[in-house]
Length: 496
Picture (tube, rainbow, N blue to C red):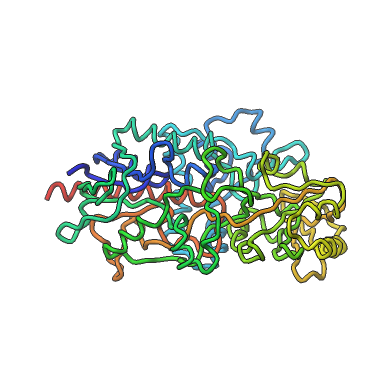
């Protein structure tokens, strides 16, 4: 054999699977379709933020390391118990998520991050993602606290460095096209290398090659009409090949095939992930203002919940608007609270001292209807409640067809800004069915011998929506399990 375990994919889940298998004593080859300069899949384009359950700062320091007295005094990390993490996963998936996968993700979340840290990847507090300064203290909420140093590129580089040191063989520009079946068991991978067909023989295979978000034809087929028009936030290589080859080998398609993670994305962004800019085209401060479409109308409750629980479905709503665009509108009261991506050069941004002047800079907007919408919104704001961006402050609106439930402020103080956004798809929710040992199941719900899966191509965990930071954590948890189980399967096979 070429290796005991072959791993298909090159992002967070694949690398965790490779490291886990190697730690269990297996020889490992990792097949990355991208060239080395584009390695890492969607993980490279992520913020490197992981959602994990924790009870106190001491548990967080088992991942961060010692934060020091000054950081502890200046930061309120709160707590995020397992029960709350579990409830968030169940709630946003509308109770459809696989209960076994949900339990695995919650129970092993923090331990998986400790394990990644042991492999040399450093974590830092995610100050720029989910915190605001209140009375001189930086306050976190909602469980999104942990971020890899250097964000997605730092995560990817750290895991590849660990894989190299552990003895994992990495083959770049190696596109897996099918699985080898030997005597009813998966025994390797068929690949294209330099335009020629090659075979990688292995005792077990882990598929961790992402979803089908970069495949325009599959998006239109499974997500629905218009989805071929969406921009892709991440890698151009996630075209569903890992899912297809597993289904061809008898695996059961599973999960929310018509669902995906899709966000508000700058209209000027390129069609695929931008290696020069990274993950900067997102626009995630919408809860501080209002969102209007080309007709000047609001269509979404910007304050329905914390950003982490609404942002992953916002892209779908924007895609359904005229011309597949919308504008996020803010006034001077909140501009200093906007995330850093709103200040970067090259963004689709308009700025003016009056609302009529702002509207003139918003291409294609119905100016009169937009100005009327802002007046109606301003009149509906409940001003008797205090604005507090760190909690659901209940500062909403009255008697609007589309309410704003929290963080409602009148749009009335210059300067005014508008940011044009479209839909940016991150990953798809449909994929393969696995058990709690990351074994891929067939249509009779029996394990496909020798086949394991992890990462975005695992179906059944996320439906309709997504709690921010859960994807990388799921990839780490299931990748670690898949690698360990694949190594054990390959060891038994080697002995027989």
